[in-house]
Length: 195
Ligand SMILES: Cc1cc2nc3c(=O)[nH]c(=O)nc-3n(C[C@H](O)[C@H](O)[C@H](O)COP(=O)(O)O)c2cc1C
Image (spheres, rainbow, N blue to C red):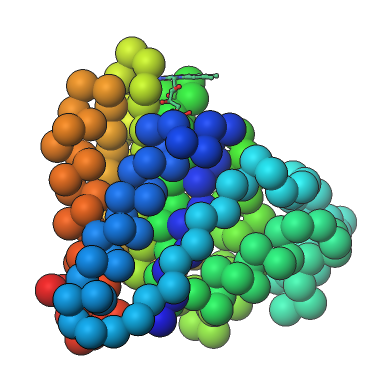
């Protein structure tokens, strides 16, 4: 059993990454209590080289729509494979300009193309997700960022999505929610239903 957290802040110990790690800690706690093993990993999206989608092809639908994968050979491919192999995903972005970060959007643009093209055969279809948006400045924008992530998730077809729109002001509550979300994810993976 394994859960991968993808986080898109430059600060490996900032608010965004810390919330993602709290989800993983909750999942680890729940699996330990159940006497099961879980592997967790955190991927810093900004350390990878992931290009923007080139909307290739004459009409912009891309060769991915025909099931031929992406024309680009960059770090997207290996991260996509890692997420496909994982049992659940934690996706965490800082809130920039009231939205997801630039690298989060670039990655999700590519992921949406790949998965939407596969329709019912989507490799991430039904996989549980926790989505974290961390607004560490004014506190404005995490709900809008959730809306943005929800749109991606709708096309990607991931399910059991728990969204944690977090600001400096509500982070105390949201850290507890992140821990609980991790326990919940573990419950889904252990039992097939929430713990
Ligand atoms: C370009 C940019 C735009 C930002 N826009 C917002 C914003 O709209 N709302 C907000 O509360 N904070 C905003 N911030 C602050 C970040 O959300 C804050 O630094 C966040 O906690 C980053 O998470 P981290 O600690 O994981 O790096 C912005 C920061 C940057 C660099």
